[in-house]
Image (cartoon, rainbow, N blue to C red):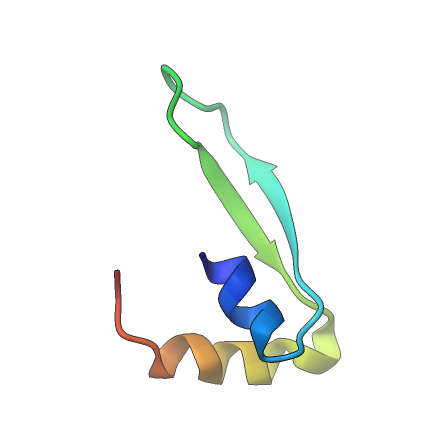
Length: 51
C-alpha cells in the first residue's frame, strides 16, 4: 500500500525485505526512495491517515 501511494504521487519506490518473515506473514520491508525524493515521500506519508 505504501509503495502504491508513493508511486501514485510520481515517486520512484523500491521495497527491500528486512528481517525474516514469520509463519506466512508478509514480513517487514524497507521502503526505499531516491535521496532527492526523500523529503517529498516523508511529507506524503506524514499527511496520510494511518491504516
